Length: 155
Image (cartoon, rainbow, N blue to C red):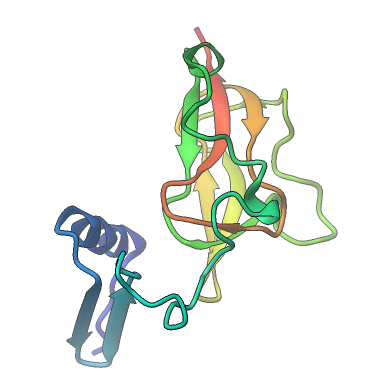
């Protein structure tokens, strides 16, 4: 019998790593082996293997910073990345994007895909409303917790 772990369990492990300020976690059950590690503050930069460009680099400059005014964010629902991976706006390069700025979205509607470890994970809208902003460009890497979309919920 093969051991299984789902996406929600993996995110719980990641949350636990951050909550307990752990730098590494390893789990091995039968034929399943998971190893999650993150760079500590004191790690030599030559030892670090980046999974995405550093914040502030040209590839991530479209990401709003924490200094955005509260007025810009008031009343918006932000959809954040539930994992580290690559952001895709459509199911394949020849297909149109799932959503565009200004589109109406419904709850549980697929709005993007994040590829992580060769798995395509559909990300769904959590609320019904109007898509106000898309923060990431197609094909760019995303970090856990990074803003992907802003939706103005329906009143």
